[in-house]
Length: 367
Image (cartoon, rainbow, N blue to C red; front, side, top):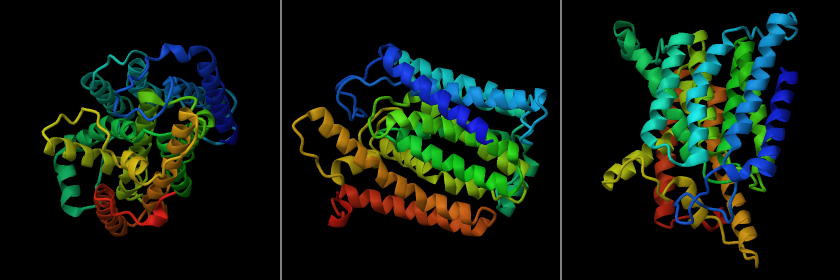
């Protein structure tokens, strides 16, 4: 597992360096008026290419070790990993195409993530067997297609959730890395080494990308990177619950509640204003932190000033993510406790958002 993670890290970091040096100009540039733009200059948005290269290289190497080298790490990464690759590629390639052209509309990207979900159901047999609530569990048994619908919703929705929180250097990447390691930890607790190996490889590839993304901001993940994180984490979360009855289905829900809450609240906020949920704006939680909590950085060079202020935003959200990750890891098999923490986080999120909007932020939180 360590060897595979080193390969994922090295391949992703090397590919990212090549993209920055020779291929950066191939990505379409963000316009100056884009609401999600918080940087100066043109930065390549092809980090998803580096991530995909690192993930695929390590996964395929793991399959080769299992089938040809006698599986020295007892990871059992057989040909079934091909199903994961097939499910990942439609969303990943669609996101990369959008990064290169900025002409792939939200509708088509949603269809591609739905295609990833459909392939996961067809090739991997993914389903949601239980939700940890007696009445809903009975309904899942009575209506078999309902579990498949939840799989489609999760795999189609989570990539877009990661895309929403991908706004500042190190933000989405570190959240993805933390979540992957938390999932891998629970996988090892239940003896699911093959699933843990896949997750550790994704975390390592993310680390290779972060070498260039934080704090220097030389490469962005783009839609491709966000979709790779979303699809792989959704596949791992669903597989973990399906394959291991002792894992509560509320464990991945609490673990991923920050990007999920950001997505749901964003949809509600836009619909309440009469706007399309697919329309970009600058009112996401991380954007408000950038504008109203992070203090301005005084520097003669505008690019360096914006970069330093950008880098100060992500640590707030890393800490916010730990509010869900820590209890999720501690109580991964205790459904009632996990449900309570989900409710507490929802209250904390709305309270924090309204407090920032109304300028009610304690001075000690500003730096």
